[in-house]
Length: 300
Length: 300
Image (tube, rainbow over all chains, first blue to last red; front, side, top):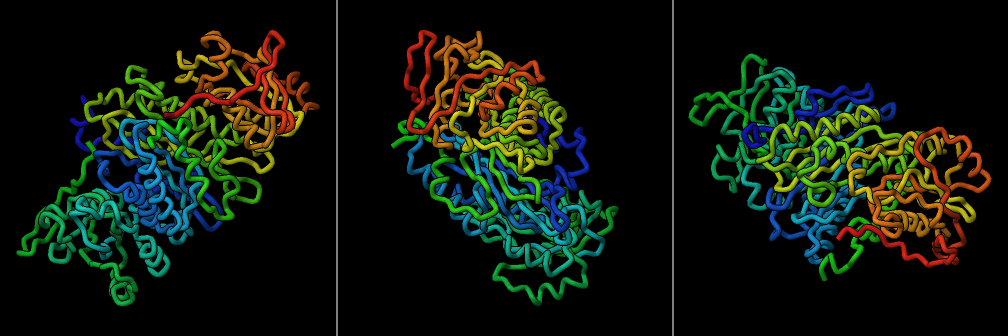
């Protein structure tokens, strides 16, 4: 049996089934970041992302944008937990034949995002590699009352998404801005019952919330903000790497949120959380309902 | 200009020259791990290591040993700071054509070391990659009084090393045991002025201590525990991936340390820290002195 035959092989989830964790781990594998005991009022958050040439970027892409993306992905994970990013360590694998200029552009891209989001770059590792590989691990913090998990969605919660989705492969996957200020606004001003960043595609990522929360959902095609760069609606909801926020909150807060939302970032109400037995449904523009299998971007 | 033309190109050190860090960073890039403000009595430690197929291991190597090595390297870094490892996140890049069995062996190797050293595996990332790549980032903790940096060596300190060095490429680089219990014994019972784990070779790593501490040193060939697997003494002191501890402490404690050392692990007194103007000298068995250029393992 080969990895590619497994379809959605996820090494990390596979590990998670067999490990025992200490009482210091509030949430281990299975959310956007791990949640760890820290101080009286705060949790520590911990996440990691690996980007590989040919998969997450191409060698022809601007090095500065690759650097930018490598840190932004991680910041997006911390944002989706409701937290603030703090400290990053960076591992890079680079070919010996690479131009020094290219390496310098790469790190300037990382540095710019680090400065913008006040992340301290505190360490790393440099290795020689045929293909360019970048791994950034990021520590963040979140006030206990602001923590947002995938697992907290409640029946009748309204489902929102920021921005537009789909077609990010055209360029946005390299130059997106992590929705940190939006996420912080949300957790500080509302009871956000669940949140995730859209990296595997809307259906797959909302699917993660439903699975972790043991809930169902109904979403409406006409409310879903498909990007003009997506190859149609059905592709938009399965494309990966949007790095938008998908979140749910109680209905009584949904209208208030729409009315006080202070950002230019688009905010769309796309559906409602249902009882777990109701499954996951998409209502087409025609009014027809479809059962959803929440597959998205696959890694193998 | 290509990276390989720079010789000792180190992406991370290159970054470190241009970044400003917040006051929460006690020690950023340039030690075995970053040191961060944490609680009243403790610092947080943060480190990362990337292993790539064909460079740090070969595909023919046992997957369990590769897993073992990937976490052990990081634990060795935390040990060299005087700390205890706590939480790890694991990124793996694997070919789709890889056997599921191989992936399972890999993670069992990681898990075994995690259990032995009480590290919680709390998250990670799985990506598709032509070559196998593993990156582990590890958070540790250290009591403030037990922190051991590269930069603290004092004139007349005695220099020690654990174990035997050189020739680890034959097999020990895959199945070494990080010197965590030895390091914890040292920092709890002695004033360890400086410490590093030997990953670039004795001369290069002791060179790091001297550079960071602005000191010189004299070491004696006859006291240096070259492994029988090394291709001679000159190779032993430049071979990488020993993962032994090199440390220095005041002379008045050196004899006591030798007499109460409770481990089977060999402990060798190999030289003395000198004033920075005296440079770095090796005394040959013949009695002849040689100036050392502390080059070791190069990454490109």
